[in-house]
Amino acid sequence: MPSTAIRKTEYDPVRRVLSVWFVASGKRHEFEDVPPETFAAFRAAFAKGRYFNDHIRNQFRHRLVAEDSNRRQVLRDSTAGKA
Image 1: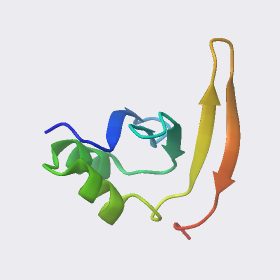
Image 2: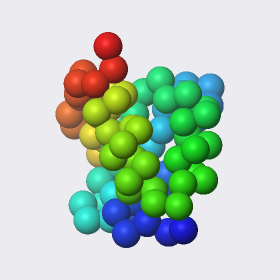
Image 3: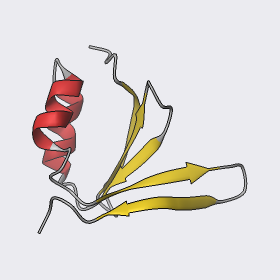
Image 4: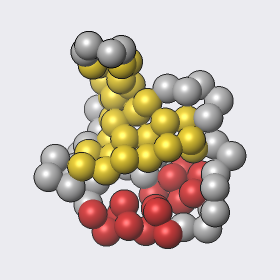
């Protein structure tokens, strides 16, 4: 089911990085060291926003990423969550 909060997701299984774009802000956040099983469950979840809040948000180190056509820039890095 489509989410009203999450616009798009991408997952890099080699780097184990989950990228999430949010509807309200349009901003992209990258979550580090996300297991493939977590991403698979996220994709399969009926309520993606709820799954994100319960299983991803504040569980993995993340950063806000700004992108333009030539480069990617990390705007903010968070170490909260994963120990």
